[in-house]
Image (cartoon, rainbow, N blue to C red; front, side, top):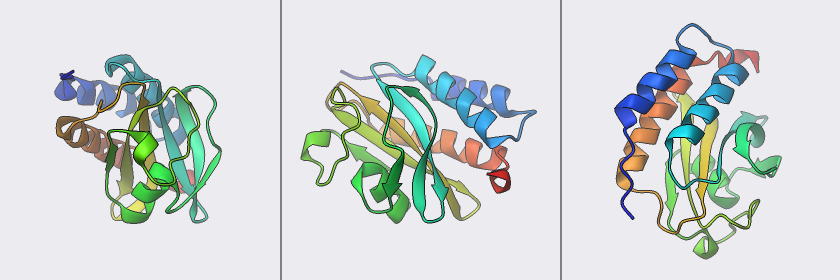
Length: 156
């Protein structure tokens, strides 16, 4: 299936909910809701925040999730360690995949930076194999850049 997400519209929605706010938790909470409402065939969307060299669960939409993920572990930890977006067409083939929701079959994880500092990762899961495309990577990296700049990461 070819998904056609309107990323310019999605970015305008994210800008609208973060424009007058810098609180990280508030912005990430609203961002998760906006993404959840606008992306088709996803079952989990949320953020893992960088805390003392590890990833800690932040705002999300979906089933309960793993609370802490080490850098280099699973898809989120790989994205955090490398600083590069990870698109996984089939999570069951990803070495060391951390299965928080057994319904997930594909995943994209996008690093979120403030300047050059990694502050979080955006994690999105889908029950559909091969759900995420290059267009999703580009659009979600733009979303992550917007959030990286909109939040006051020093308060958390």
